[in-house]
Length: 133
Ligand SMILES: Nc1ncnc2c1ncn2[C@@H]1O[C@H](COP(=O)(O)OP(=O)(O)OP(=O)(O)O)[C@@H](O)[C@H]1O
Image (cartoon, rainbow, N blue to C red; front, top):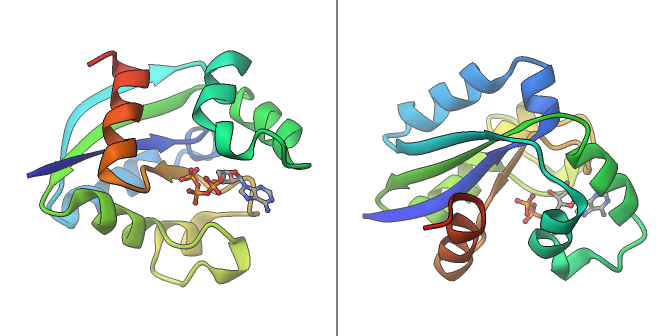
């Protein structure tokens, strides 16, 4: 059993896609072990996105991620980290395949609906960051 940190981003919530996305996660056999509605601030985003904080698109990313609440989730299952990344699809909007969550719903590379941890190590760091455990 593995766990990963998944976050439905503000556009997923305002566009009322959360139910459909959670359906796909559960249909794949994963379990939502915890869920939390949060409003993120600049400080936590600087920490979470430290690897891209110097990129030119970072200010747009912060205004997008603070534009409304996000739903943070702990998702559990076999190979959950890699499996969720496959279900989510590519970061680049134009590369996200049809049938993946981003391929079907993302409107741009920034407004891309969902986040998933990229390694088991980062999953544990992110779960601690957003759930404190
Ligand atoms: N070239 C870009 N232009 C605009 N926004 C970008 C770009 N690259 C990344 N982003 C935004 O920053 C987020 C984090 O980028 P990262 O490179 O960590 O991709 P990711 O691991 O697929 O995404 P996430 O960490 O959200 O799961 C992306 O999900 C996207 O919202």
